[in-house]
Length: 227
Image 1 (cartoon, rainbow, N blue to C red):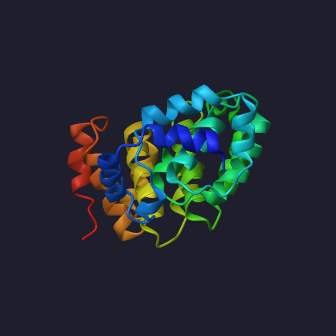
Image 2 (image 1 turned 135 degrees about the horizontal axis):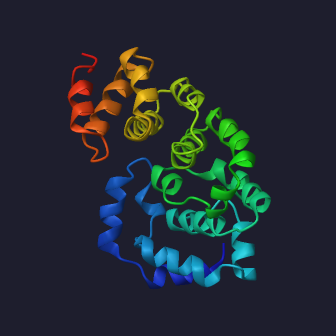
C-alpha cells in the first residue's frame, strides 16, 4: 500500500465520523473505514494528482481501506485523456464494493466524449457486478438525460434485472430523474409497469420527493402506485 497516502488519511481521521459513515454503508466492514470527510479526501487527491505517488497508488489494487477507494476514484475523475480515463476506470470498477464509492465521482472528460462513452455505458450496465452496472446507469443518468437523450436508454435501464438492493435503488433513481427531465417518455414505463413492482413504487416515491417534478405530474404518479 502507499505509505504516504495512508499517512495522510490517518492524519485527518475522525472517529465519530467513522461511526456515522459505517451506519450508512452497512455492507462493508467498519474495520475497512478510517473515518474521513469527503472534502478532505478530495483535497488529498488533488494534492497528489499527477505525481508518481498517485501513479503507484493507482496500480495498487485491491486497497485495504474504503477511503483509499474513494481517493482512487477521485484521481481517475481528474484524468484528462478519455482513453486513459477509461482504462483506469475499467481496471478499478471490479473492486468497487459499496454505493458511496460508486456514486461519489464522475470523470470530467466524459462530458465532451459522449459518442465514445456510450458503448462503455452499455457494457457496464450489462455487467453482473452490481456496482459496475450501477455506475453505468448513473453515468447514463448524468450524461444522457438532457440534449443527448434517446428513449431507448430508458429500456436499457428498465431491462436490467437483479435482486440486489443497491442495483434496484439505482434503477428507481434513474427513472425518478427521467420523470423530472424526460417525463413524456418516462411516464409510459410507469403506466405500463415495465419495472419490477418494488422498483416501480420506489421510482414513484423518489419522483414525489423531487422538486423537479411538477405538482400536476406528482398527482398523476400517485394514481400509478402498484399495490
